[in-house]
Image 1: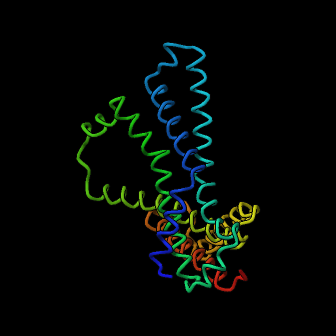
Image 2: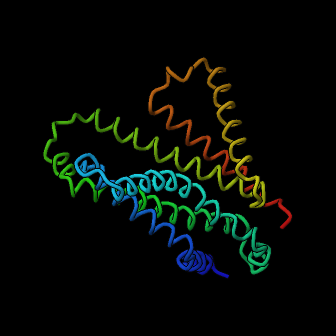
Image 3: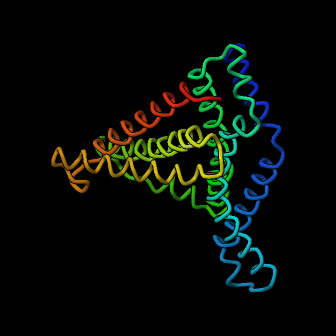
Length: 240
């Protein structure tokens, strides 16, 4: 089986996951409506049962969004373990390492789509409706090249931090074979990696508060690569 066909299969399967798609649609609508109500401060001018109910739903939706953004990739990553089809996939001629990167790519794509629909899109809609986006665009000042570089590095730190957490989740799923205690493995790996980086910084005499953004970016990249390599090595030796 070709890798492209495996990737298409993952996309097809995720697009037909009606339960998760429905939850995503409901959370997106609640985030948009709640954001519009709060940004327009209509809850202060027209207090009432409906507005209070929408505010409660918005609070629940924000909390549900954070939970969903973690649970959704976890569900996508554990599907093959749960359905016991990974062994069949490997038997079809796809190597474990190749399948790892296909699975990571497909899960990462849908995780980004869910984050866009649940967080970025509602924020943009609220800003456009309230004029905040237009103000942010028109009220610009001259930015030096060094400041642009710092902004890009900071943005890179956020992206790499998210990718590092995602790779850690994938490795946790592999170690736990998709079982319910994956969350404890995930927390344990995060704690172990933070302690390891702190020890290494201590050996080099570089405390966290003396590190610049570039050093933090490099540190996160190294952690992500090490944890990803651990996941691949375990998957190669794992009894499926």
